[in-house]
Image 1 (cartoon, rainbow, N blue to C red):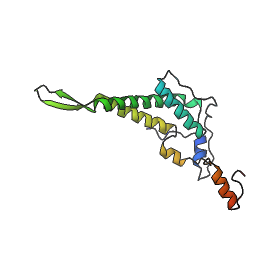
Image 2 (image 1 turned 135 degrees about the vertical axis):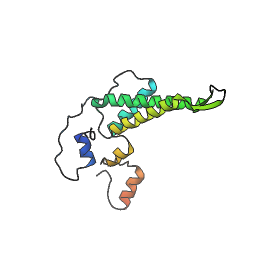
Image 3 (image 1 turned 90 degrees about the horizontal axis):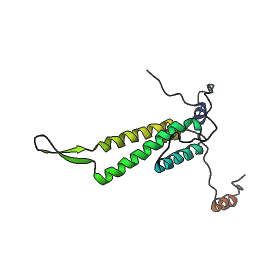
Image 4 (image 1 turned 30 degrees about the horizontal axis):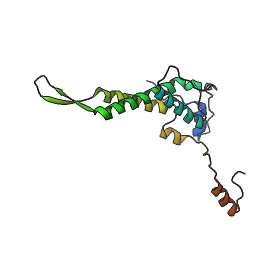
Length: 163
């Protein structure tokens, strides 16, 4: 039976090392930017670009993760497509049984959508882009400074925020 997935050393460093144990250097992710491993639909390409931009925000965008990003983007696109179809057609359909009775059944698209959402969630988890993973990472917040904040800081004698 397999254990947990090995966490990259960079992710371990971001999430902290409370035991101060030495981090084993795992294979460094490629410095190249991620690119799709197969041709994506225009909507899946948008999801791909969005995931890459989110990974870039936490300094994890790498060609090493191209396959996972591609699969996740494709799953998100498929889930969105199935959801759209289910909104139009409904989640059930009416059919007649062998005895002549009427029965309502769940559309097969419901299972396709659910499986695509499960795959997308797993992909985002593998990429550390789900809420639980992001909360564990210790990423310094980027401070947005506007003119009002600057005036406030100067008024109370703390000087400039940019120092």
